[in-house]
Image 1 (cartoon, rainbow, N blue to C red):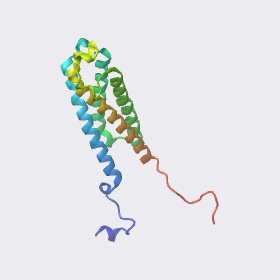
Image 2 (cartoon, helix red, strand yellow):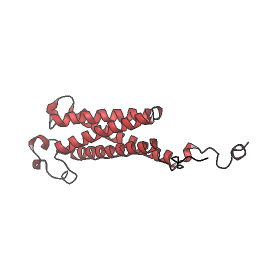
Image 3 (cartoon, rainbow, N blue to C red):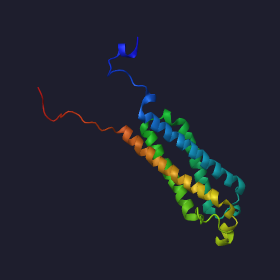
Image 4 (cartoon, one colour):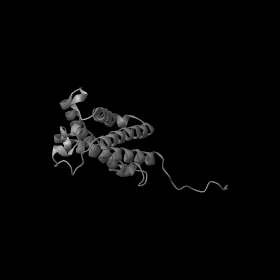
Length: 180
């Protein structure tokens, strides 16, 4: 039996793979996965080079911010793996938590680092003594900050998108009047 014979034209089930919501979520989670993987690569490379000694980093705050970003990368990847198996309310909460962590990591990096996209080609003597030795990592630090801000924004968009998905507003009949 075909779908039209069993169901009426309006009652035929719609495949979840044909909805706009499915493709928006697919694109968002693919973007989340790709950017989180890139951030993980940048953060783990700097942590691997510096080791566990604070003297190998420009400041202790920068080292601890790398730890926050590493944790957030791992938590995001674990969330991506399991997001389909948790409720929508918990998905919204996890996206809020991830947004807080991504925003914190990006904000601390913005506050601590003297590097910006247009300062990476300057000589190391233009930076203070702590950061002068780290100036060869300028492009990586700027990329980490940019990815962290982008992941913060994506987490916020996912959180509000899921909230609007969860709370659906529809027009309905006037139920305040009794009809016979």
